[in-house]
Image (cartoon, rainbow, N blue to C red; front, side):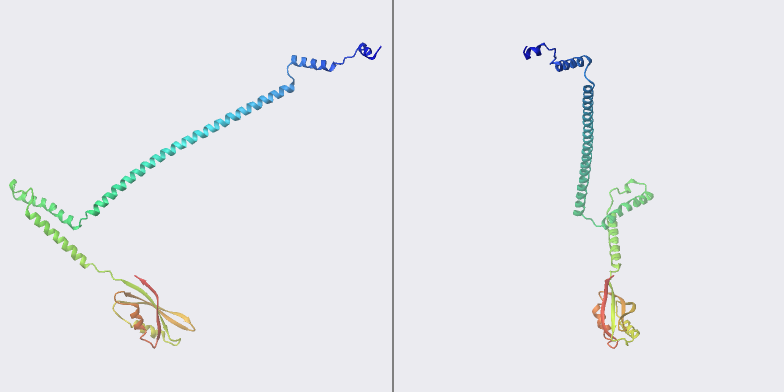
Amino acid sequence: MSGLQCLASENIWFDKQRYDEAEKRFYEGANGPSSQQQQVKTALQQAKGRQQKRQHRNSSSHAAGDQELVSRMKSLELENQALHKVVETMRDALQKLESRVAMLEKSPAPAAVPCAKAAPVQAAPVKQVENGGGDDDDDDIDLFGSDEDDDEAARLKQERLDAYAAKKSKKPALIAKSSILLDVKPWDDETDMAKLEECVRSVQMDGLLWGASKLVPVGYGIKKLQINCVVEDDKVGTDILEEEITKFDDYVQSVDVAAFNKI
């Protein structure tokens, strides 16, 4: 007997693995999918649900943001329109004001003329009352005025103009004044500073008024006299003051202007 015949007579199951796999698949199909496949399927469903929720939330947030942006844009447009209206109103008012100012500048009127013209209007009723009290006839009432009213208005106008001119002429003219601070320096420390100040104050002229004074140390025991004065610009100048003070050459070495202020 050969080897192949011996193997053919032997009871050996070479395809057992294939049959086991087929049996396993048969039972799995009968009992349903395995627990691992169910877990995988559940996980996939949960992941898909989370993704759908995320997408829904993102779409709702985007929609809310777009709606808020649209509402803000609408409110800004309304505010812009209101501001345009306000600007137009202000521009119209400014143009009217400019036109009125231009008309007033083109036709100026003196202040005394309206007052003079208003006087006859006040005087007319008084005359009518007097005439009515003296005579009851309607023929004596002058409804259109008379030459006497015109003469009275001209007289009142002239009187007011004369009074205004007199008042203006009596108004004092503005006098320009200045405050001057002078530094008067002696020759040495042995100079009598009291005598020096007395000499300075002895300078008198129209429009000059001496003020306060003090001694300021200079150095090496020497002090200078610092004195203030008020002068009228049209009558007294700094050159005249320096010239008059330096005449006292026994006490005064020099005169300087320390400060000069208009009053």
